[in-house]
Length: 311
Image 1 (cartoon, rainbow, N blue to C red):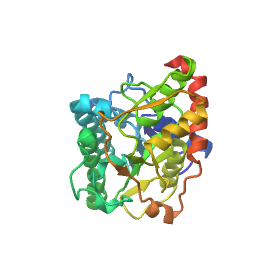
Image 2 (cartoon, rainbow, N blue to C red; image 1 turned 135 degrees about the vertical axis):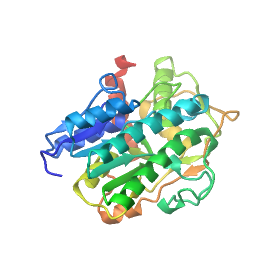
Image 3 (cartoon, rainbow, N blue to C red; image 1 turned 90 degrees about the vertical axis):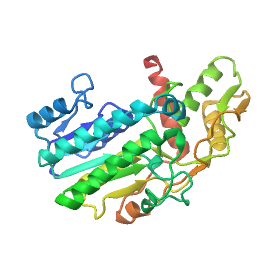
């Protein structure tokens, strides 16, 4: 991509999209396009097709999705399936029909089977059943991966899917009803500290293991994909290291300075027992994460405090 190529970032105001925008802008890309959801409803096929016809982007990065944690996925399975299918199908199909040659599709590690061998390799896709609490979102993302693979196979276009591990960072969702585990914990510990170091109640046993990637590291992986022609259609993006949920909680508690009790509610679901990504395929091509978990949590907490009035 030339520095003046028109690059459309779908979901440019979200955590991932805004990080990708910052990374591309910092590298000198001057012709970035973004549309708010009020200006362009990505669930509407006609609106998306008309947008592509008017804007004629050279490349598309799909960072738009309906996302949430275990609670949100459990309680709202239909929109997590249907809205994600609508968003990605409209973007992928419109890009294909507009003869766009390069497309980056962003998914999630939840596309892999619940009990797949660890660490998760790209070839484990569709080899077993999914985690029931988020299979709706996962099925939609799998469909997006396969659509990009099909276009690549049939038409030879550079459509690539990146599957990041659990993400966190600036512009994350800190709403306790719909957020993922790390930002939810961060807010809980912050509020407990502000309220006299009250006890913090957390879901599950604390034993599941999770891998976390600071969102700016993912943005660098997207930038790497923009600037290179990758030989395959699907790549994992992670750190190669994981921690237990209990270790994560204790790390966040220490960074925030909360001195109260931790209470684990084992009646709540744990989700997948372990999700560690094998990101060696992308690593061998030249990408590597640079931000440690502790540093990333510190940066995220500083952002949260500065922007707390937005909650």
